[in-house]
Amino acid sequence: MYGSVIASLFLVASASSALATNLEEDRTRGDVHGLFEIRDAAVKFIATENLKNGTRWQVLMQNRKILVPKCAVSLRVEWVPRSHGMSGPNVAVICAKTVRPTTQKKWEVFVPIDKGPVAQK
Image (cartoon, rainbow, N blue to C red):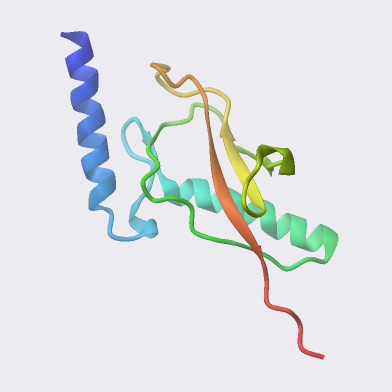
């Protein structure tokens, strides 16, 4: 019975995520962490990196099909090493502890990054 309740909650969360027509609407709610906040963490990280290094990286759209449990701690963001075999540069938005650890006690979402437009000379 307990398993079917959890499965039902997951299906409701999946349906509400699917109802979000854009990223702005996909915010943290209930037991689901919103993609808006995940992307926002990546944007802030990249803005800091750009200021520090004089670069013009831009955050691209992450996979909208991702569904992760709500995070209980502050999100951490770091560059994904090339050894992970990604097709391009990515940052990982990392949750070290979820609110209700079920099968996912922690998670990481990869967000693609692209070089900004080349400056005209």
